[in-house]
Length: 372
Image (tube, rainbow, N blue to C red):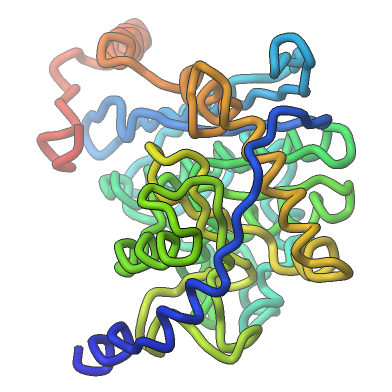
């Protein structure tokens, strides 16, 4: 704690941060494409005996710039994605069913993703992490962990479809970060970590810009960062500014002590950005290999200005001012209302009853998992 307090009170850190903040102009003209992705689900929807049924939903939306409407949506063949996953107390059944759902969502084999993702190369045991047995398979009742795995896999599956089909130069945004929770472990991993990095690989190969945007910076220094922006720009409520989160690897200094937050995540570069004075400071994560080849090469500031101009343009639609509308559109399509969840559960129960399962066998999943 003392190390953290002394680190944060370092005046030199604040001065460096203020000097690194860059403004960018409000962007009213831009030519390009932007896709947004978001997901949700019911984790779990129903349970009976030792069985749980999880429902995963994810959607994407692709837009191009338009001089009249600002953004014009392009039609897509497959959206949203919906997947039902039945899991029991049997590890063999659970592993088979969970991996089958992953493959159904992604459209390719789990092994193919493991072999062609660069996730394993980021750690110290690439051979071990490319094996299916390295994947963590939670118990059927572990709604928290299973929900994260299924929802994130569904979201990244939609992102991958956009990456594979969108025109070169398209900006594909997911809601969240590029976090790799188990990147530091030598033998265990989560499938969505491999899939996230597989999306990065395919995006580089296709010339697509793949990024994650979090509505929260997730940093304990948020107030100090805003103070630094005020000092740098001379405005009480500064907007249209960005700053790359410094790292000791790239900059020889950091916002955090060694035991602080893992920002940027392994294999990524992070920026903090404010798109509108009434919007929070958000965090944009980019694949580090993409950043090194497309942003850090040549005129870095010009490349950064171009990146944030595109983000700014898609974030000033009247329907979601200050936040990228393609993500908002995807969120609206993937969202499940409480009524829709109730109807879905009823339909699942009725189908099971017709198949011969007693209605009395079903229970409210929240009674066992603590989740609603």
